[in-house]
Length: 374
Image 1 (cartoon, helix red, strand yellow):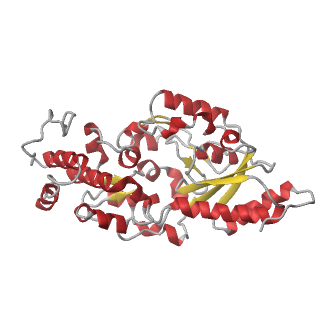
Image 2 (cartoon, helix red, strand yellow; image 1 turned 90 degrees about the vertical axis):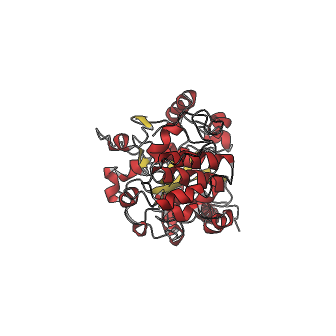
Image 3 (cartoon, one colour; image 1 turned 120 degrees about the vertical axis):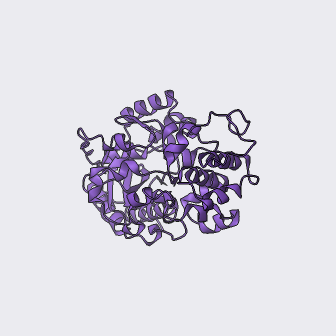
């Protein structure tokens, strides 16, 4: 139970305690930022004006509340930013999976349990601990769960810098980590921002399979495989399908090649350990799942939020990109006349890749709507 504190608060000591309590709760690092995001706001509005957010209309919906914490939660003057590693050496070599077109590549962050609840629960525990020490205070905890510019806030707090691929990088631990925030009205001392250490490196830009990193620190989500396989709910543009390869949920290529990730350390979180059902499994086996099997095997996972149809859509594309085999053709044909129109269209496209185009499928059909390409 939180009590109202009568004596003055030593905010310098409280900040030090918050960082220590955060580490005790499993966060690798906790730091504090103010709420001035003018530069990040300018970047965000320019990105939106260029329509690089694609169909993620929620990026526009909240206006300035995303870049002005005090408008999202009145009274906010500080942000407690926390980092939690998710990389695990139990997931196998990511590059080896990408090189095997028969296997399904799932972004490493999604191999364990959904991180949203895990981080919010830890942040709530941290807030409770703060309250026991200083009494009643205003706060709200977030983990990719509200209009929050979490990478910009983490950069201000000194957890790392936003790299050329637009992910946050820490020079001691790389970029395989989640972020979470507590907005608060406590006037805590702020930490210094981290310097940028990308230098002349352009490994992430050159490695992007679809050319989504259109320039240093500039991402066009409409070309990003993570957007195409997770955020997009309609057909994947035909000209991008061959570039997706065997990536069925997200993409890590820009992180895999980042030289700073040689310093990444494996997580110790049991909930983030890979689940056997989705870790580097055979594409055909995954494609044969019923909807109930999909729901059962992705329970508690971030994968479930894309839904069964997008799951099959993504795997159909990966099967279309795999070397031709009787097993793959048979699996695709088994879904050619059942399921949603979205799935059937991607299945039909995949069959054309194996020169088994169904008679009703052509570049002018209602199902395709786009020019076929190999």
